[in-house]
Image (cartoon, rainbow, N blue to C red; front, side, top):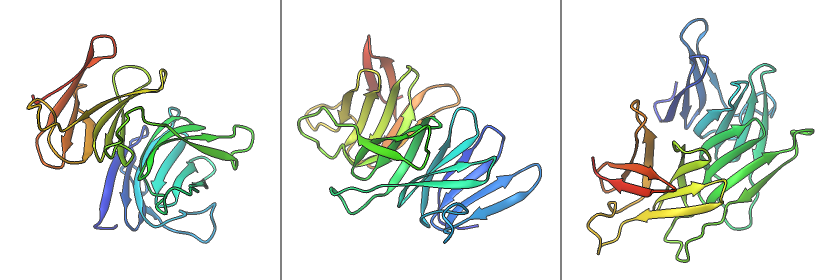
Length: 231
């Protein structure tokens, strides 16, 4: 088990998954104990890159999506097979995906160093796939392309996106963004720095924290307007 861990996730079956810089570890508290998966020369039996940054399962629990330096990997838990969805881009040499939210077994949102992308897997041939960049709507990018976190909000189809520049609220149905970032002229704006931490509490409240410190709560909705305040 690596001591350089990036994320801990508990799936629908109660298994604990640990993303690390030395691969992926899982802990079955009822039967097997710890198991590890690392880079493999056989692409169907292991990971395509050593560093694992995040993961999420599809709504049925049959597939686990793994975010790494190469892109995304889909793990079929019944067949124990891995399919790798490598990123290829001319915009950046860094293909790393830091976080993933799985919509269903063939669609996922990926938080990448160079933007927010949607992965679409061909239903008939899962080896075929496309990554499509979700374009920001702000004129001045301000660093919103560098994406760290994707968290579903309480409204259907709405996501909280943690980025280098601040928080973006993405409405997948309308394909629009709303932006919150530090503004020196506005004392109510969020603190300075990237927003790497975005989470939902056990009380179904939503919070973020910029690198300069402080905790801010996200509330409201599209109809009444979104609000960010310090609790």
